[in-house]
Image (cartoon, rainbow, N blue to C red):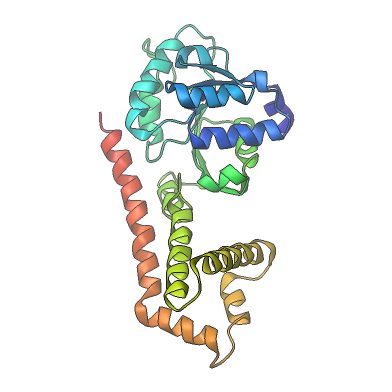
Length: 289
């Protein structure tokens, strides 16, 4: 399906960080920059995109006019207006493009309603995707969900798009599970932010105990990177990796017992549920009109 992606005309509606990350991944894999069109209203972002060699415009209609694949990369709060604009722009097309939405919380039902042609025709086929910001360094994690009308070839096309920046690309079989993906790995940065916060606190604790901030930062960053690499490259479960490095009555066991006493498990459960619930609320609130 990579060959189909190579031949496709791809339009990004929105030129923010996530769009930039995906475009960077696509062009690194040899996608012709002249087949990538970005619409972005903000001059600064549009000029940055233009500097990469892709085609740019301030018009959503112009960017998507001849596209085979349209990535809806706008904030959820403006998704409805953008979708209705696209529906009007595509009114004369014999077939609508495949739409990949990375707008957090916006459900398929809302997207179908907003993108439906005004003459009552069928809406375009849509795939919802929850990527995260490590896509900026080619280490993203993405969850995907497609409606029943999306063909296998279209799913493969969407997966090929995300694999350009994601090391983990997971399909879910129920749309509500995308909210859980948001709470776990994050549409924009939920999941990564958990780890950033952990490293932030590790640095602060070590600094309070006497290390310089520079030393603590370098050591904490590399520890996070090394642990992540062990997780992704090992065939063992995270729980087993934890056991492997925990000596009885040693320093690691003392720290883990402190975590347990402080309610780490409950704190993580609450954090993931809070982000999941907020994603669900966004979908209900922004998709209600």
